[in-house]
Image 1 (cartoon, rainbow, N blue to C red):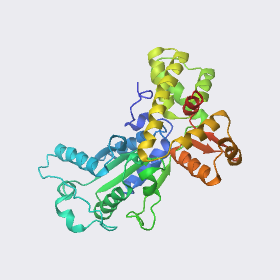
Image 2: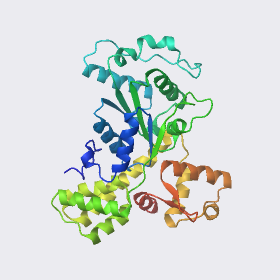
Image 3: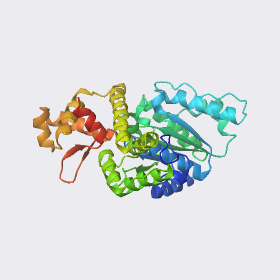
Image 4: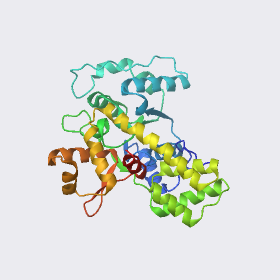
Amino acid sequence: MKLFDTKPKTDPDFLYGREKELELLAQYLGQKDWVILLGPRRIGKTSLAKCAITRLGCKSLLIDARDTTNFEEALISSLKEYQSSLNIKAEVKVPHIPVNLGVNYNRRLSSHTLDAVLKRISRLIILIDEAQWLHNPRRVNMLLAYLYDTYYDKITFIITGSMIGVMKSIVDPGAKSPLYGRAMTKMEIKRWSSSTSIGFLKAGSKEIGLDMDDKTGVAIEGKLDGLPGWLTLFGYNYNHTKNPDTAMAETVKEAKKVVSEELGSIENLGIDTERPIIILKALAKVPSRFSELLDLTGFGNAVLSRHLDTLERLGYVEKDKVGEYFISDPILAAYIKEG
């Protein structure tokens, strides 16, 4: 089972429906561009990044920001593991960053830091996954700026996430940011079209020796709405239950648990969740324009605008062509409706 494997893909042959994005990302990485992959959770950013690295045949490290709040420590730990794999004996350190340090790292501090590893390698790609969960934007950006200026020829970063928290400060650095003026390529990853989603369900079902007719495929796609993560989870459950209805029930049940945990973790970013939840409850009933949400929530213009912006950057809410806001993840909408 390859297509319905719920782990992030690493083999480009099993990265379904992302051929153009894969080709473009591999091209950027091949010319040593630092790349930012933007998109909501479960859209396939991690799989796309890992498959591009595989295609290039480069050495790589993964730092999952969901597992740490300290990028500096996570980077040190990952580099030490990489150092061990290369049998490099020298100790790897990243110096303490003084609070009052300016925009650039003090280059005098670099002599006993990353050089111990980086001088022994020819090329390394570092994937920072879900970077919005990192803390301390300025500290993260100072370290990235130092690596950009000092090791651009050796290190290439892929940074994935949605436009909140530290990720926002990386994507749109202000004039006073340590990253200001450093060129990074942005790629926004979109959800699958209906035809791509149905094609994925059929191809994955065929791979595991099960049938998927057009009617069933359309029904599943309609409930999971082009999000590769949920469609893959359905396929995983379908492989085990052999029944599409049972598989869908299991998928919704498991997905709601994921959504619940994710909503709870937003508070760790210092984001107010009470007002966004009120907005989500209103939109779970019916898509609404800004003026209608003012009446439904009782918020003022500035408050509503600020929290809608947060929800959009999280990838939870989108605005259609006629100006109506709606919840973009059907599982999230169902979860909110149930209270």
